Length: 573
Image (cartoon, rainbow, N blue to C red; front, side):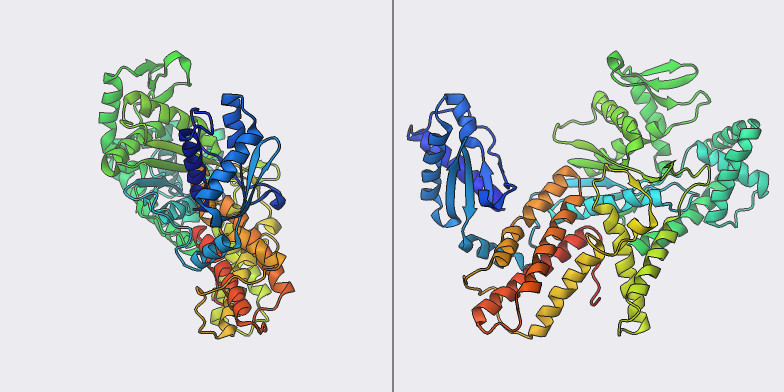
């Protein structure tokens, strides 16, 4: 990355000047450079001269000028110019030669990828729907944000493992088994919608008949004890649910490496309880077994309920221990809703206290996404107030069909294009927001096909591909020459080189929306250029080659960005 090159260049310049005693020796801090908001301030800027000034009481402007001279000696062709401005910022303007060199790199499909993760493993825990419930709109965020993070880390060279941690265990299954026994006489030839209705009915009836709650607890105890009837119904619910999930994942174009439900970790739970007890962190409280934190740093977490049933917390402890032992990851990312924030604080602190993180380099991260809400509050499956994801996706495809109905494509191709556009619109609408932000469910907004949207970016890719196809050129687009540039061309060049930085930033911040913002801005700049300047009718072969290369680089970067987000691009639009 150019950013890293310049950071290293500044460090080298400081060290050489210190050895020559032209800059006072000081503890050199981490070199920080950033992109100024105003393009008149250059492509990069740093405050290192001011940092050194504070440590030495020397003028930041003089330090800046000395650094400027040394940097230009080390790498004169990298910059068009370097400016030192009050109160001591150093502004770097990249040379056209540097920008053209980066443009040549940007036409490669792997542009922006990295080997920074070589030899390291990352686990992404995402999607994790609950058995016996249809995919609701609320499941969309974890599924597609998690998939995007998986794609991003993989692109950066990490060995990435996607884990679908299914909610297939817990007291809710006692309630569902009780409902099936009571109202369906134990029959399991049911649909996912019927299972959901039974779950809702159980909670409504339990408000009138509290005995039902105890009945649900009794069936969950039986399930944990291995009761044949309880296990039969439970397995049937899983089979019905997995069939439903497979259909939704296919619609979304999501593929997760492994699916391990909470039940998988059941066999490890006695050992987890034993270890927590032996290390002195377990305590009896009102018949239950809790995990206690020193000095009340956090509220206690429940390990076992008063009736002996295990909890989500205990199963998550078992999952972490299993993952650490089997995969030896450097990072485990949990893409789970913000309502679980306390749970993960308790979980990660417990893991530290138990001494499972033998290296400080192992990180556990909770990416707490905001929720889809109605205009009046939170969706609730118990109350029957949810929107099914399949309904949203099908509606999106239907609306996309209406937009392209005048297309000359045959019906089969129209169907395929509408599916790519409609589902892309839904995914991009979500991914373009900060993960932590709540999203109010709005049919018009979620299916937006204009402006800062998936279809706009898909259209930019298709436009670039169309230009290159019409050019019918056998020119080697890597052999471009420096030609006089207009402002629109310069703006695109000064955007393109940032792409590798953007991908790394999206990974470090666990925020796919950073990629969304970048490829949208790049698309805007390219489409403005396209509207103002000819490409195919340019007579000067060098200028034509340059503009075709600019088109190829833009299309490649936008397509790569969309692919990282899990969004496909149609051949035509």
